[in-house]
Structure formats: C-alpha cells, structure tokens
Image 1: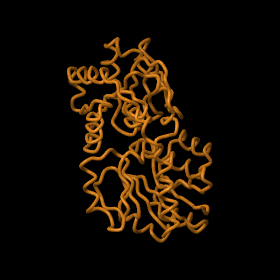
Image 2: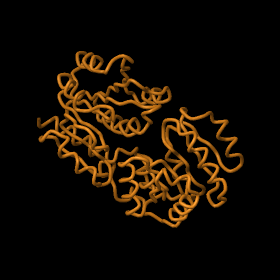
Image 3: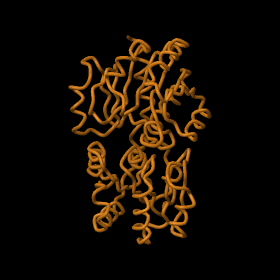
Length: 331
C-alpha cells in the first residue's frame, strides 16, 4: 500500500469536550503504524492533548482564531497532497466540506447526530443501531458509503485487552469540558452510599482544581485528572456513573455496568440501547435531582453482570483503516 496523507479536522476542550479527539486519535495512531502521514488541523486543543499528540508522532496545524480553517487546509495540501480529509466535528457540515473538496482527494466524516447535511465519500457512525441513523438517507450524497454500528468502534487497544482483576468502588466521570456543578452534586449523593465507596472521580483540567475535588471526597475516594490511559482506572471499578458518550462504550467493552446519564436525543438513543443489551442503565439528566431515581438506577446497575464486549468485538480502528485504504486504492 502506498503511503497516504491523512488530515483530521477536529477540536477539543471547553465546549467541544475530548471525545472527538480520543476516538480520532485511535484511528490516527492506527494509520501512523501502517506508515501513513497524519496531520491534525485544529482551532481548539488543550495543552495536555497537544503534548499527547507530539508523543504519538502526530503533526498539529493550528487554525487562526479568525479563520474557518480552509486556508490552513489549502496550505497543508500545497505542501503535501491530501489523500483523505477526516472530519470529526459537530460544527462542520456540507457547506465547509464542499469548500474543502479542492484540497483533498476524498472526505470521510465521523458523526452520530444525523442532524445536518454532509458532502463526503464515507460516513462512519459507530453508535449501536438506532432510529436517528435512518435520517442519514436524506442528508448524504447518493454515492456516500455509510458505515454503521459499533463493530467500527474507535476505542483504544487497551479496552480490547482481556483482564480478570478485582474490582471495587464507583467510577464517576462526566466527560471533557467543565461539568463541575453537576459533578459536585453527584459526589455528595454518592458519598452517602457506603456501598459505592471508594469513589474514583475522573476530571479534566477544564474542571475546578484537583484540591477542590479531593477536599470534597475526603476519605471517601480519590480524584484523577487528565489520565492519558484511563483503562486501568476503569477496570478497577465495579460500577460507573458517567455522562453517556464514548466512555459508555469503553465501559461496555470491559464489562463494567454503568449508569449512563443522557441529555440529548443521541445520548438517549445510546443509553437506552445499552440498557436493552444489559450493559447499563439509562438515566435522564432531568432525573438527577430526584434522589429516588438515582438510587433506583444505581441499584439496577449494581445488580447487572454484563459480559465484556471485548470478548466478541474486534478493534474498529483496524476495520475503518482497511476501508480507507481500499477505497483510495479502487477510486
């Protein structure tokens, strides 16, 4: 296979969270290991994630705050032709993608919202099958290849590794960005339940300082920040309370039951699908203030014994990378 040049357009931190970065990073690393060149084009990227990219050998091209990124993409393309533009960004639609066509041979979009039009050759939605995915028919070009389902899950290799270790306590993670206020409320409620101890609270640098959280936890648990490899922490928990997202799939791969808190239609679809599969319990963010609803969800999740999905699922990044190489070769 000839060496290809991939450009990933994504943002992370603050309003974007870190989920787009984490899943795209898995595919970036897989492509690098195959000998391809990878450039990340970003306007927002926290320093810890920039450092992680440098360690993995990725090239980062910053987007000027006043730019829409097309000028920077054109510059990259002029330096070295772009074979694939991979877009993982909820703020980008067909308008920007069409304008980017002159600067990339092919375009792939990673999406799961199905709420806007795309101009792309491949669309990957790695969510479990759900009703929202039916909407893509009217949102994509007729020739677009649709790749659906969590057999294409871009989870890190460590979540596919088998393990059999003792588990204790409750993982609490509400994702990237600053969710300090709801996290504080959850900690207070979970500290009241001794059967949930120790609490294992994961935050990012966008949250309030570490000292604030450790003071809240006291002897009831421990706080962790910006873990580069959270898999060992996840594996150590017997239960999890998380904001529904990519972490929900990572926990399902490890066989850890979770209360998946949802606040958007796509999160609700995923959380309810995981509940039907017996890997977690769906809980609306509106019900968090109701102690009875939370206690019921915790009780249901604690009674589950899901089979780790990594016993049957193969790493999705390899399948997606294979598709990208074959598509380029035959077009």
